[in-house]
Image (cartoon, rainbow over all chains, first blue to last red; front, side, top):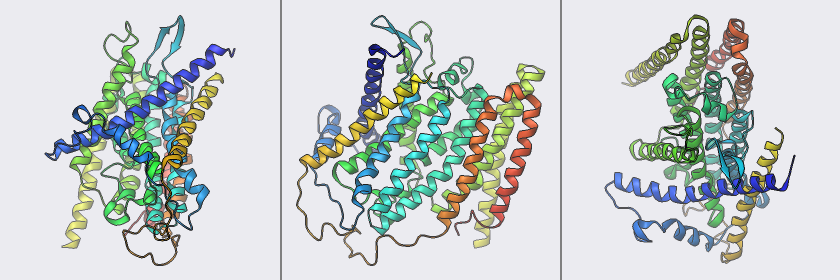
Amino acid sequence: MIDLALVLEWVIKSLVVIFMLLGGFAYLTWFERRILARMQTRVGPNRAGWQGLLQPVADAVKLVFKEELIPARADKVIFVLAPILTVVPATVLAVVIPFGTQVILFGRQVNLAVADINVGILFLMAVASVAVYGIVLAGWSSNNKFALMGGMRSTAQMISYELALGLSFVLVALMADSLQLSEIVEAQRTMWFVVLQPVGAIVFLIVTLAEVNRAPFDMPEAEQELAAGFHSEYSGMKFALFFMAEYQKMIVISIIAVTLFFGGYLGPFIGRFPWLGPVYVLGKVVALLFGMVWIRATLPRIRYDRLMDLGWKVLLPLVLGLVLITATGILLADEFGNSLVWSIPVVSILAGFLTVGLVDRSLRRKFNALR
Amino acid sequence: MLFDYMAIAVFVFFSTAIAVTAILLGGLFGPRRKSEVKSEPYESGMIPIGPGTRRMPVRFYLVAVLFILFDIEVVFFLPWAVSFRKLGLFGLIEMFIFIGILLVGYFYAWKKGALEWE
């Protein structure tokens, strides 16, 4: 039954997760700038506080005291609403993630998840789709042609990659036999899904880069052509909210990747010390975020038609194939013995190489036709 | 079970509250010095020509329509994925047929040029 303690527990857990994401966002900007600087043989922000650790605080204070412009002829209500609509889904994605098993706290059994609903994956897909609205509305309401173009590009990109994202969710649901995220993590006790379905994990990581508009898929923000894209008219805290949405989404989508493919909160001694769960999640997430920053430092932005081609003509058929391969492999393992489960990674990797080969051939053909 | 959704409602409330607070803080502390030039659309210093909202290429709408088709099919996959082990071989063959039909439409769209961005 609903009692006061339960409501209090929800409030505390929600606030802890929200402020964890806020702090994570602040220090992810610092982390990214420092790492990028090191990769470009610079130093990066190191003046505010020890090693520049107070830099995010300084940035936040500066943005609060900035003037907020609303352009003339902009749709004012939607213009103010759009950043909220972008940042809320980015935060709410984290609500279904399990950060650990159960711990005893103040004499209560506490689940280390805000709401471990049984259709967790469906919830993730739904909320991830809502995030598109904020971006398209921001681009449309600004009354600026570059903002509109950025918004449209971004929308087309996100919805195209959502298909491959949804299908890689299906891969995980197949392997775990559940849509509940805690059960998905528990299903990885013997083996992480990245071992069972390595190509699926790689596709998922590529797709998440496109979903959060990160390099090399940061078309909507192409500075050189669109002057920052959908948020070019935003300033002050409204701009900060878009920035926050992007970085929180980076964090949350890394947590999702960790939960779905990299064993979530699992690690050595997790059975004896349940408090280690969040620590393992944090460690794995930092590794993935480092990878994202690394990719940004390494790869140039890809052309828009290639981006859409990659989503529709390469990733979508590849993941459809992977779904069939995984389903067949599971069925074979169920019927003819467990060792046949290894047919999944083997055939998947072959399918991955086949895809890379076909892409290579078609690019070569185009290149030769040009010559 | 439904209690979990109330926890989600609590979470949504607090995250919205924080976003609204941030905007209010900005409006409270930020200076307000309006001028005609400032409220023009920003185009890197150029004087904007023509209206801000103009026609977009029809390809964006094509992508949106195709997305709706395929996304619904992705959602159909999820219940199958959860009950797949109970359905066994029957479910697998059904899914092969389903994906086959899906692929017919997919290649039709491809050959029609709906996926091309010149």
